[in-house]
Amino acid sequence: MKRTDLEKNAGLKIKGKIGQSGAPGRFGSEAGAVPDRREQRKLDQALGLVPFAVKLNADLIKQVQDLAQSRQLGLNEVVAELLKKGLAAS
Image (cartoon, helix red, strand yellow):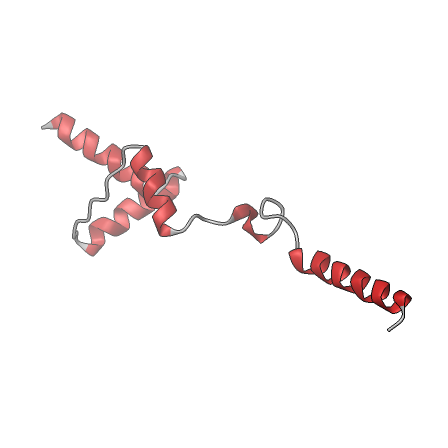
């Protein structure tokens, strides 16, 4: 092989690696990505949040969801607010 062919091949390898790398995470598809469950759990623990599962009537859940949607808040915030109000009243 000639020296020029070797240089040409080396250039093609470099160009191929540049094309494979893609955009960095902060600009690409990962920009608005939601953290996975493990990362989300760590974030929640840092905020002092604890998972709390309950079983409620479907009609009650629908009312809470409608309330959250009308206030444009998350379901967690609305449930926390309702629990605080309920506990303060009793």
